Length: 149
Image 1 (cartoon, rainbow, N blue to C red):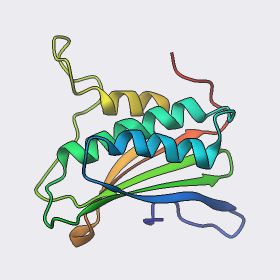
Image 2 (cartoon, rainbow, N blue to C red):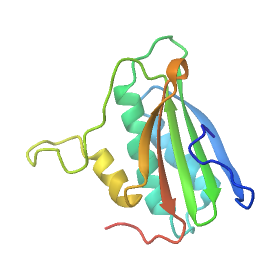
Image 3 (spheres, rainbow, N blue to C red):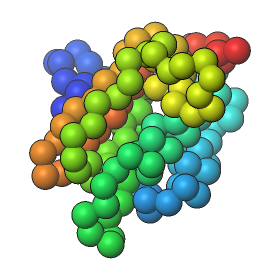
Image 4 (cartoon, rainbow, N blue to C red):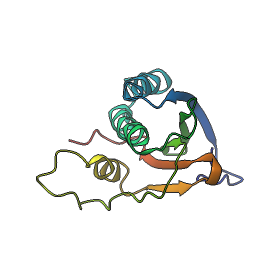
């Protein structure tokens, strides 16, 4: 993990999976397939995690500045107590600030991905600059969460 989920003495966490994805629009579908494999489609939070994964990987693919031809995006899913922690590390590059939730004009066709993640995670998400390693966007989703409608 990238340091967002600090381990406390009584905190049990388990990395369910980690995958490296190309900076390519098709990577969102591959990421969703990994989540299904790691979590299982019958998990109560599966739909929420799948949707958040799709949004975060798509944002990484669209907004990263590729510095090297072999740059990748890293997806990590970790189970902690009552939540599932999703992290997407991209190569970063340049300054980037996510739009604040709820600020996308109604007539825009795109740009609501982080609004969706904000809702699914109950405002438990963030962006962390990893310096030369890139940028991580993360969120925490309740394990017992019902799918958002």
